[in-house]
Structures are given as C-alpha cells and as structure tokens.
Image 1 (cartoon, rainbow, N blue to C red):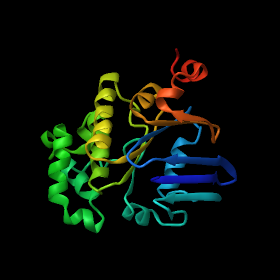
Image 2 (cartoon, one colour):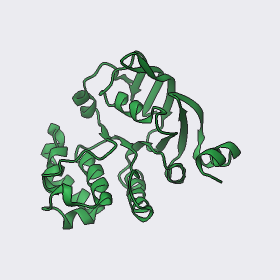
Image 3 (cartoon, one colour):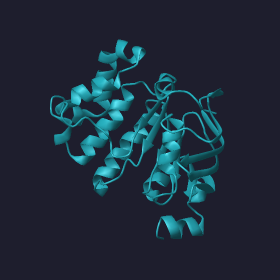
Image 4 (cartoon, rainbow, N blue to C red):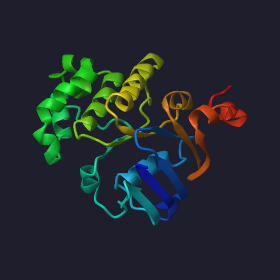
Length: 236
C-alpha cells in the first residue's frame, strides 16, 4: 500500500472541511477523488502534501507517518503535488519552469537525463522550450505543470483538476499522458477531478466525496455501474 489515510479531520479556521476521511491508494494505481465543488478534494490533496495540517487523523506513506512534516520534507519522500490552476511562473520560459521542478538534490543531479526523458513524453514542450509559460495554450500549460512535477522524480503524484478549463479534445490528450505516467513511468497517482467520466475512464479505484466525507468508494469498473453514480455524476 502506497498511501493510507485514517480518520482525517481538517479545518479552515473554525470551519470543518474534511470529516473522518479514510482512504487507501495502492502502489502503481490511479485513484480518483470525485465530487462537486466544495466537497473537499483540493483540501485533501493540500493536506497530504503538507500545505494544510489536520486537526486529527493519520496519513502514512509507505508506512511512514507524514502528518507534521514540512512540505519540502514530503517532497523529499517523492510525493509531488500538481495544484489546481497549474501555478506556473508565466514570465519564465518552459525550460526555466522545468528547471525549478528539480529543486531537490537528487533530481538536480539528474536534471539533464530527466529533461530528455520528460520532453520525450511531452514533445510539444520541446518545441516550446524557450517560450514563456504564460504564452502557452491551456492544454500546454497543464502538460507543463505535470512535466515540472515529474522533474522532481515523484513516486506518488497528486494531480488536482487536470481537465479544468480545457476543451474536450485537449482533456483527452492530457489524460493519455496521465495514463502513460502510470503504465510507462510506474508512478502512483491520486487525482481530484470534477470530470467524473474521465476519472472513471483512467482510474483503478474511485472515492466519492460530498461535504467533506467519503460517501461511496469502489473499483472504477464496478462503481460506474451503480445507477445513482451514473445519474448524479455521469448524467446517464
């Protein structure tokens, strides 16, 4: 088991956002968090990556408790976060954004090899290497955000809303790359996604969040057959 979360409570000030969240992410899998806006998906990813501290509960990564660690310490363990909205440096080039992804010592030492490998995965970024990130299309920016995270050599990749604001064809392209990360790069992925159809398409296991709680969970191929899930989240 790669990641195990048990009875997690998280607050923003006095407002409780996550309530008794428990979930597991298997090594080498893609696990999806789906649910409406405000359900707690982004808060959960921020808590795993150390940006937020839980009031209660446990987060173990490969049997190591990570609650209380600083974000840079969590990065050193191989947990890398691709935030909602991409959060690129728009006035820096694609190359410079990728360089900033290699901020831990091991990744810096392998920067050249990692860059070559990642530009093979995202060939469009090779064409845009010396272009400012802010001039890229939305899809290219999302690819750059994922590529920058890969430069840190993740073992567990947290991806928040990868389809947000993208056209359907571009979403398909981004998700093809996400599948490649699992199949070819052997990276474990936990993604938060409002686009439930795409989440079910690529995921091994799905958790449904509503008002800060896990209300349903199951293997993607089984949960997608549930009549209520199909009606509420897939519009079928």
